[in-house]
Figure 1 (spheres, rainbow, N blue to C red):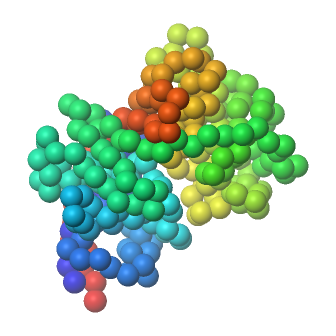
Figure 2: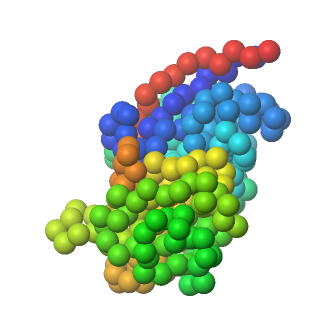
Length: 266
């Protein structure tokens, strides 16, 4: 079969920044083995597969090693492809049926807003190996369904941290968000990074699902419903966060297409 595949940089307004994802809008459903093979071939943190369904699209996300239940940047990339390649008109809502429920995306000028489920964190006792794996001291450690959320003392520590990925991958969850307030005078409210060696990704450049955890965490501390976040990976990316204390988080980002090609398989 021949299949168009599009590569998009998400949570950025310029190429070669943000988080790259591959997007396949499929004519019919494919089996999991085929989708995983494609994800391995693309070798990006996520490859998204969409099939039109009723009033929306079935959406699944694969890393090069596993299927994941939720991925923000590949959802943003998928919505971008649906509008930019005219699967949807600009005034239509993108509705995705996923393993995390129904997700909605809306085009708002140059930004795409995603409607995601909130992910609350509870303070926990850190595994003994965590400090050694991170290589820095931390203020507090929390746990959510994505993994550990670790608050560091400063923006500089978040930006400069160099984890031991082998140790991180040996932890029970193998996925860690590190975060802190930004320095005084910054354009952003908080910074973060996301490490996921447990699913084959040492560092994810920009992570929408992590901001579903970060939204309630920082709202409780900053007492603001609208926050501007920066994920301080090497590529970097900007996320607008809106959370009013309910069960949904609204994440907004920009996206650019960087590559489009034809996948030819047996």
